[in-house]
Amino acid sequence: MSNYNFKVDLKGIIRLLSDNLYSSDNVFLRELLQNAVDAIQARKKEDSDFKSGKIDVIYQEQKNAALLIFKDNGIGLNKEEIHSFLSVIGQSSKRSEQVRQSFIGQFGIGLLSCFLVANEIKVITKSIKEEQAYQWIGKSDGTYKITERKTATDNGTEVHLKLEGRMYDRFDEEEIIDNLYEYGFLITSPIYFHGNGWEKYINDTFIPWRQPICMAEQIMEFGEHLFGEQFFDMIPLIGEGIKGYAFISTRQVNANATNRHKIFLKNMFITEDGKDVIPKWAFFTRCILNAEDLTPTASREGFSKDYKLMKAKNQIEKCIFDYFVSLSQYDVRKLKQLTTIHNIAIKSLAVENEQIYKLFFPFLTFPTNKGTFTGFQIMNAAKKKPVSYCMEIDDFRRVCPLLEGTESLLINAGYIYDTNLLQQTSKYYKNINIKLFEDSSYENLLETPPTEMLVSMEYFLEQAEKTLEPMRCRISLKNFSPQQLPALYVPGDEGLFDSTMDGQNFSSFFEGFDFSNEEESSGARLYLNCTNSLVKRLYILRDPEYIETVIQVMYVQALLAGHYTLGNKEMEMMNKGLIKLMEYGIGGMEA
Image (cartoon, rainbow, N blue to C red):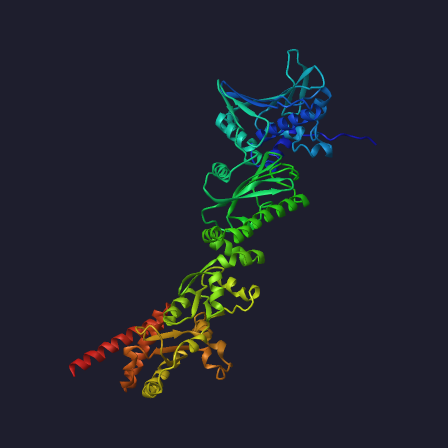
């Protein structure tokens, strides 16, 4: 039996890298930058006196092409290491676990990414361990050659790439500079870009957490420059192996919005996607974070979901939550401002998170019949007087006028999350009773008129009941505000059911059911306002047909006033009723 070695199709592997591992072809810049950083770090470990690590990126225009050179003064490679690390796919100068704890790149794998933009890679390198320098040239067809350099060469490594065609158009000087800054502005070794006759220092950025003393204003300026927007405040993110800041947005942010962050590993940019490390509920922040011991994925565009990532996420969550707790104790004014800006967003979190609920509910705002109230004001009111809420905005609008001149507090909970939040008050706050305003609540709210008026209206009410019977609507006399409102319609459970089902299509559904024992309060009801000047005079009507017309018009008018949708039946009733009333009026004038 014979043993054979696998044959590797290098071009096929490059296609796999392009299609499946890396999200963009510009990652070759990050890989070269990472290799240079790791080489400098390795030299510092070998030579404690070495302090002046440096990375130079040189861009030389050629005819319809450009030569791109990455140069570092790091540890370099000797001939044996060149064979092992540049010419064996998957091999790396950083394969041992101990070394991996200090570096995040892999020279062999990372270098392959250069084939995404060039057909040939030239590496010139000189190890600090020997005098001889070497040149390695690898091609995308899988061949390579190594030669000894005869000219004097400094310690370190140079990688030469020739950008041609589409890649030359894609990676001009500006694009490369932008990527170098994006990936490496936290890198401690200086990065210089050399163009045609000019030079730019890439990573001379002010990094607040590296300063012995840094004012809050300086940190805010740093964040606003970094993310290109103004912020309300900043939260230091400090924990074991993590440093950074969470900047709180001044604009309202949707809870499902995808915020772009700046997440680094050992000072190298990894990703803008913070979903695995930034708490989901902190969506109103934009974070810059540098981690020291997280585990990168193969593409180094994310992190492995291990205990290290969970630990970092928990630390970040604690930093942000502790900030809010601190505000609630020492700067309530700022917490109220923050809650006002992100009122809806924070409500969406509070309905699902007990800690967020307890912390923020007192500062969340709700519309009421007496203006906008905070959760704290609502809880205080509930200790002294009736407090209720409506689940629908239209219900709130109908009830509000009835409460004029009373002490009752009514909350408009028809907006998203509000009902859910108010329903949880009894769970988290003892002795707080906030009730749902139901149809049965009208009976307690509306006053019964004097007996003499009830007696005088007896005939009218008897005829009105007959008129409203086909609509399955009862009628009552009550005193309520405002006086200008002649009638109030309350749908009841039966009315709500009717609004969702077509009687013509579902009439057979009700056959065999006995509704005779249902409580009266469960059906629709039309309340006539005895304080209204028109209603006060209805007792004089004695013509059943005239009463029928009047009550039909008042019924439809009450539907309109209550913002209920009118069907064809109600529209026809209104039109016929108005015509009849005009005919009665004209007839009276002729008489």
